[in-house]
Length: 442
Ligand SMILES: Nc1nc2c(ncn2[C@@H]2O[C@H](COP(=O)(O)OP(=O)(O)O)[C@@H](O)[C@H]2O)c(=O)[nH]1
Ligand SMILES: [Mg+2]
Image (cartoon, rainbow, N blue to C red; front, top):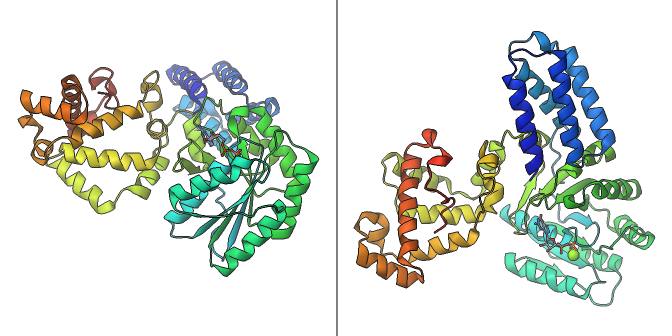
């Protein structure tokens, strides 16, 4: 996400750092470039104007010119201002603390409401809460079916009624949830192609009847300024409690993310970063700012890892790495953990400096499937000690996994490179990996 913007900031900051001394002129020049980068990222022009003014004021106020590392100080000011524009501190979703807590999702068709409903249900389940997904989109025949499929995939229950008004469905759903002790009710309401009065009235009616704890607008970040206008209109009519920004994994230029809070005053609470149900993140202004400015986002990465990695297992693994006993078996386990964390591309993008390193490298998740198949075709001894894999064993593994010997060779080569790399993580450089190999494309 934010690909172009990150690159541009990178260049701007590089120039600033390179300048031995900062003058008013090179600050001005840098800010002019920041301004252009933001506009090109489709950030609302009024927001850009305020932003640049604010940064300039602070830069002058803080006597940047006399500080020791002036470039870094400017970067910090830009960072702080960006955090402020994004909302200063994280605003979490309403806690799931009564039976039932109610989240109501609204937004236009195709913005990602139903997908988000599934993601929120999955998140609730991971916290040992019992969610109920309510199909209140009665206009699209496939909508109920879509929700059913989603529900089945995460083993969450669906509530739907035939031939009822959406508001009636919602009211009945809440009663059902109360009787059956659900912790969280997620209302997946109907969208429209455009905002219209009928939609607003319907949403207003549901809101008045059920008084949701969370009324979230689901906005597609790919629509840029339209998402900002949409948020403005929904917020003024429905008094939203928050915005869920979706499809931030795509080519979105980030404009919507940066503008929504500043224009509407409504907090962004969660962001959707992929079609997979695990691709959901809380919105943290400071981390988002770091990500936009290309400083990576280690905190989110660590948090993500913690939510899926078994701690004891991780400790054992660390021990094995120390002893240089990392095997293909461990490698396989790691891949399974990684898969649980969500799309690889979005994970890697969070590692500082990785955004650029990955540029142009196609991440082929199918490559991972092949790697899995190859490892599965090995005997336990072979996984423990790949050294014993000779020509005839390679042939057997290749046939067993439906691959060529070349594929097996590639995997072994990469595994050995990876072993070297983790042995000395601090010295690891991307360019040291065998050419075109990341991540394990065989
Ligand atoms: N890339 C990407 N696709 C998404 C995301 N959220 C939803 N989608 C896709 O967008 C399309 C519309 O989503 P859906 O949940 O049906 O939207 P709804 O009409 O608002 O319920 C589907 O193809 C989803 O898979 C996201 O965060 N990233
Ligand atoms: Mg839907």
